Image 1 (cartoon, rainbow over the protein chains, first blue to last red):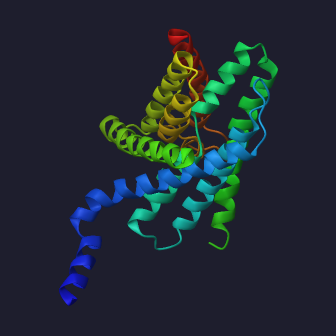
Image 2: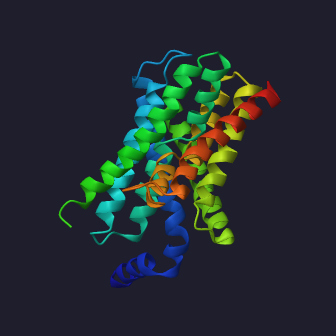
Length: 142
Length: 117
């Protein structure tokens, strides 16, 4: 019994976890983040050729949360796998660059260049503002 | 069920992103976030290719939303842009990262779409 406990502990601290723990955490976080995005996309109403509100919501909220997470993490002792799970896996998958790019192309393709431009500006400047805001809020009290 | 399978595809995409962007970033040793740029731009091209090639909902959901969605990331791009120095005054690097990425991404998505449609 005590051997089992010791072995388990040494696994979490040992080189095998360093090798497999990171990728496993990314897998788990990626699963969670993607599932959350699918739910948001299902809930937010969407019309083809219209402003892609669902993607904007996940991208801005994901940028906010990542800024917040990274700022909080600098202050606290966090587990090794926490960064891979939350920042790289979950928030990485929750947000999407590929869908953003394709939506802009499709809007231009159907002649809605004005909406496309507005969407690009809202995503880039909005995303940056969200990351900065999250970072600022996460740094409060330092 | 669709949700679980899509999320599983997304987790594999996230793992591929983790491995590829890390490798690219280490190999180049650049101060610019090249690793994220490579995964995001190849992902935009790949999504254009898939959407041009098929209209099957199952393929679009599994490959497009799932795998490629997990493979590319918006949040990391934004935080990296911020860390290149955006406040109090934007640096050239951060401006470049903010402007060049969507320009190339939209172009590549379009190229991919026209190649297969």
